[in-house]
Every structure is written in structure tokens, then in C-alpha cells.
Length: 145
Image (cartoon, rainbow, N blue to C red; front, side):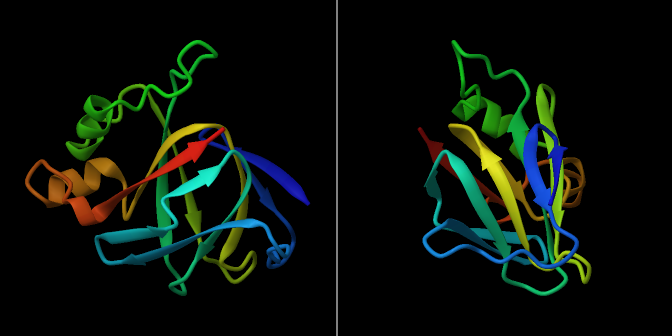
């Protein structure tokens, strides 16, 4: 298994589809056009299996790049609002895509905090929607300790 760092997130890629172990934490993501939904919206820190439920879909993940031990979650309401306007200053981004080689499941190791999942790049969504990303195009995952 190969472990990659994608925008600060640890993602594991095997040379084939990843099986979700029994009892593991899963997040199911549905992306359709400019809409994204996550189930559940809250998980515990550690190994998380991301499952893209729509074949051929992809999702962008935005996380804070300014987290410190003293302030592990700088994604305040203001920071999330800036992302909704396409402003990704002080963030890290990565993407997860369903592919024939790796399948529709990725394993991420997530620290406590909040992560924004978007149907497309924040700047592209904001431009397409007149400067503000619509609520259905961004879902926020809360990761608890």
C-alpha cells in the first residue's frame, strides 16, 4: 500500500480497489453536478474511508493550512464563509476521484478539525455562481478527537 500526502491529508492508495474493513468509519459522498453531500457529517479522528457513491465522480477537499497544537481548527465560520466566496487563502487542497485503477474508496487519516468537501475547485464554483458557492456545493465534515 502506498501512502500519499494530499494537501496535508494522508491518503492510501493500493494497486487496486480498497476494501473497507468491517467496523471501520466510512463517509459516503455523493457528487452530482455542483452538488455534494456527505453521510455522516461527523466522525472520530483516525482512519476514515471515503466512499464515492457516484461512479466516475470526484470531490475537492479543503483543509486549514494554519492548524497548530494551540489552535487545531482555524476553520471558523468566517473562514468557511471565505471559502464559499472562492477565497482559499491559508488552506490546503486535494482531490479524491473514482478511478478504474483505484476504485471509489480512499483511506484518509484525519486529525480533529473541520474539512470542506466541494463539488469542484472553490474558485471555479464561485465564478460559476456569481461569486458565492451555493450551500449544496460544499459540505463540512467535523472530525472529533
